[in-house]
Image 1 (cartoon, rainbow, N blue to C red):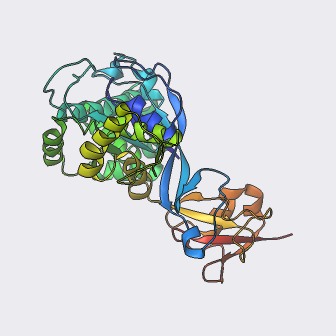
Image 2 (image 1 turned 135 degrees about the vertical axis):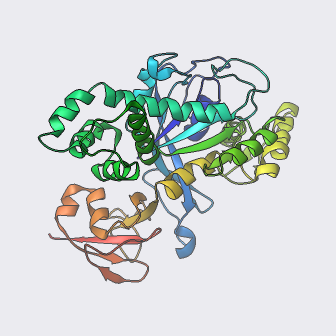
Amino acid sequence: MLIGLVGKPNSGKSTFFKACTLAEVSIANYPFTTIEANQGVGFVKVKCPETQFGKKCQPNHGFCLEGKRFVPVKIIDVAGLVPEAHKGKGRGNQFLDDLREADILIHILDASGRTDEKGQPTQNYPIDKDVEFLETEIDLWIKGILERNWKNLERKAKQTSLIKELAEQLSGLKIKEDDIKKAIKNLSLNEKGSWTDSELFEFAKKIRQKSKPIIIAANKSDLPESTENIKKLKKKFPDLLIVPCSADSELALREAAKSEIIDYVPGESDFKIEGKLNERQKKALEKIKKNVLERYKSTGIQNCLNQAVFDFLKYMIVYPVENENHLSDSKGKILPDAILLPENSTALDLAFSIHTDIGNRFIGAIDCKTRRKLGKESTLKKGDIIKILTKK
């Protein structure tokens, strides 16, 4: 799974990325701070089964804080997009191409309206324009991919079908044949081709909505102008998920927790002071508490990741173990692994996600909570703890 961070320059993407990953990336107040696509690991957060069984988990990957399990997901931060990026403006298609493999996009938007469409400082910029231009740029990028080979694609389609040829052309964008079939039917397009320019654009738009869904992270929500701007944005785009965020605040809290100044669990609505604070640190933390945590109940960063993975992509977390009595692996580590699977995944799907050899030798599974035996087509539920049974 890959989450892509997109947005215009100077919207706070690099700060959002660092807050998610605590990776060392360049952060500065000028456009194109991100020159190469940054890749890192963020974490989705769920209640850990350790709280139910009175055991302390020992994660192989990710971590657990106060009964909250943090499971890794891959994140890519792409340098800022500007209007007409699909024509090569700004960093252009280079960065659009970095998003090919993304399963979902989080659009980091400067909710304060203090940066214009190019990421330059301004005042009272209408932030709804950012939503419209970014969606349009990605739509036009997909349309451009199709246009470059359209005549050849139509010619090949005479021997096979347009749907099959489109599926092959767009396979690199994680677009499936069934999605193409539905888009063509929904738009009442000719299945043999001969589409107009506007029909091609509408098809690209429909495909983008399916293969690259977008969440809006309304960043810099702690600034004075942001509250009203976010209200207007939600009114204009009622169908979009818009999450108020403060990447600066989340990064400050995580850095403070890392330095053991505070006790903070990402995504929570409060923190506890543990170390000795100087006056500057005290004022900064009080400001975050008042302007962000008390107003929005979190910094919004963890909400974005969780909603992207669980609400939009419909994934769930399952815990494979080898010993159903101790909920451990062969080395005695308790609940060592947490695996993200699409909803409605089966016990066999889990086996193959662990290792191809385990999938090939699968003979059954045990639900460690109910002790019920599962077959290869048994559907799993979020939070299941499963022992896979294999042939010797």
